[in-house]
Figure (tube, rainbow, N blue to C red):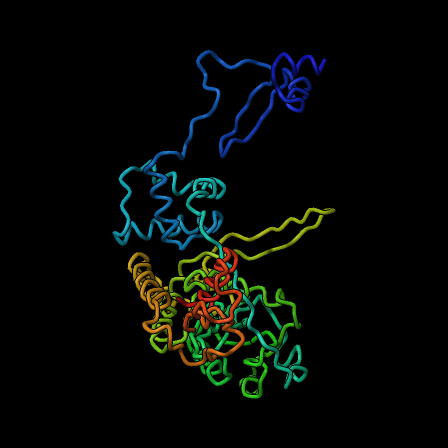
Length: 437
């Protein structure tokens, strides 16, 4: 009977079995936020449409969504929903956003995260890049740093932070290049970034003290990797003197510092990219950029925190809390003093998102222009690059600089045609000599 029913109706076998089992029985389903009651096996009314109309398909709505998505710096659907519902009323009050159609405004405030992800699928189709790890272990004090010192590690209280360095070497780790010190509070997601000249412990320690002075809460704990820029006497003695809990992660266990590792991409890499930065002017631009970025990230970028993970057989289910900005999480935290909350609220009310985002884009454009500029003299490599006879330079550039041999010389390869693979190899050698070009 099932085979004959499938052949007559053209249904799939699974749906045909469902119709036969539930024929004449009332069924209730949720389509979006609308409750629909139907009876399988009963035909549609005359003139009824087979498919429901698209609710969010108007060009004006899509343009508004794309504008807000760009303003949010490309958030995912779940975080973008929280961003839109909090930001749209503020932008309208400040006069930066005007929505003439009230229906579109209502749709923006009620659209779901899945719908936003579906509408922005083509817009999100961008190149994804992956960086490299430049952490070098420091073993001098590695086993002298205990897991707990002055206070138990408590990720429910603001002040216990993870720190890490992000290298801006552009794929070439020769010479000195700028690093970004990234600090993330575990409880609230508050993120601070500072640019340092290189990963020497004196520059890292100086930037860490600047970050501590800028935090709206007391720094209670630091958790780092095993790099020598953190595992050193200077930082160890400083944490002992200031009663700061200093812990470290296990070697080759990057997930131990998962909070700051996530911010290394979502905050640092998405803002400054994977170019090489190694000049004083780029260091100054990064300092200006990070001063704007800290305000934009902490006051306007919603974050989600993992509540629990449930494993059922081979299926792992993750449950997150509601997306909130680090600023909102600080306001909701009971252990933060009221005077600090009032100061943060006063600062938030003076901020305007649109000019802030324009300033951030302007500084990004200036930084990228300095990073992709072609050097004037390729024959004179920058300081710190290997000599022309270094093995890393290979022989591609040297063959270009050598004078052409004459046909009278005893060279059996003189009249040999250039193979396409050899030509491509020489081209790649020239391209990798100066990766920032």
